[in-house]
Image 1 (cartoon, chains in turn red, purple):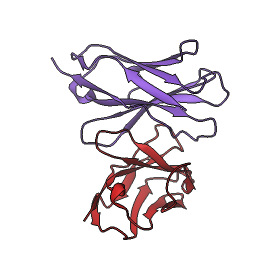
Image 2 (cartoon, chains in turn green, orange):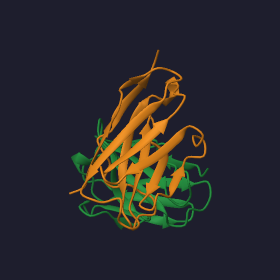
Image 3 (cartoon, chains in turn brown, yellow):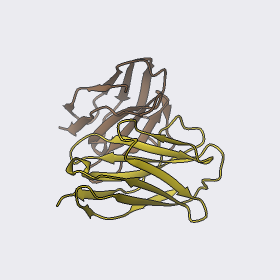
Image 4 (tube, chains in turn cyan, yellow):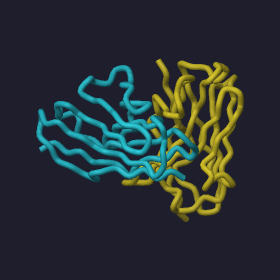
Length: 107
Length: 121
């Protein structure tokens, strides 16, 4: 299985800050890396797929980059509603493994 | 608008078999490339991918759970069923189904609201 490691596990930032979350794969996943946002008691919501494609309806302050083993999710200007846990997932090879999550809190 | 909803027992005993049903609308599992997947999430932990079924009845399973899982579809009823045998307390969690668009590499969007399954005697 491909192991996905996110960093940091948690972070706190202020409204308007630029925030970056990283995801590292234990082996190459090409660009088959997706990002989800999950709020308490809700299902994960797709933000970005194939490393950098913004899902329809997702605010443009979210962006993704990377390839092979190293990926980043960036929020350009943090908003209060961005408080959530973020997960990366590789969809290169079965099983489609998730990272352990990054909990983002707004200061 | 695509919607999915999971249904099934909220409590199962160890060693029992779990049967979950995903009922969906807004798409057809007869459409080339489309699929439905299942993901579970233990309380306070990351999601875990379980299985996926495609429009052509091709199936993919998590290798670590493959011997315990069966995924089937009923296109006339717009349902996908996941069966998990020999349930254990570590299988406790919220189980989600999700729509796999035809252009997806495997990601799901949207997901159902999830159903919490507790395994306890």
